[in-house]
Length: 293
Image 1: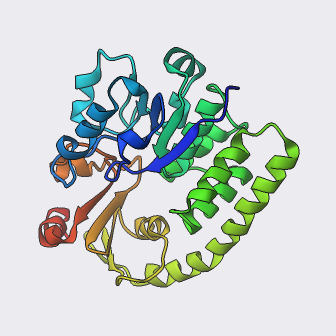
Image 2: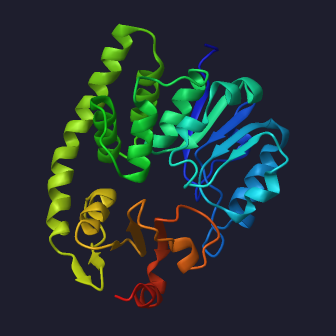
């Protein structure tokens, strides 16, 4: 394994300054910004790629976007739709790493699948542990059972989603060859995972406040309330086909991965995850009307 790369974490809507990313950069599990929302590809993803220029060595992603076709002939872009690749991590194969590496910097999505994608790159395309790819799929689609390792890491990340040291500890845990180091990183992860117990309990309070109309479950959570949005959306999906959570000026819509619901088509959004999208609350009346709520 080569020297450990620089690690950066981001979301499609909030990318770092390309000039601050050292050397050759591999971008993992970061979808192109959707059209029809702000920011868009034109004012976020496109300029970021232009600033990276030839320093971009790989862009591996599995979120739907009409602009994938623009990069069809660029071997650095390994792109798929969500239905073809339910998670990004399995796309980071030994062949991809061998052909497109080495990378001095890994810029990955700050979620479970993004961290697992980074771990696979560092491990030159190998799974961190048996069942890791299945865990990435289970978390990214919120379907299926997790291994004990996957469940521990998932709960820790959900407890402190924005915690950069935790994310680094997870990647280190997944990639270290030292048993002693692995034990230390696991202890750090377990301590954070324990925090999720209270967050989960707080979330269940709001799960009892969904109202359901025409197979759509809706709940408004006031600003400042601590809760796990993913868990709350799943609780809504347990009582209706579509779950909607309003919080902090936005509506997050979710449906089951195998539900055949496609919010990108329904709301004319140019890219993202078909079964989970976030739309400004300014469009609330339109959104709820189209959903039939």
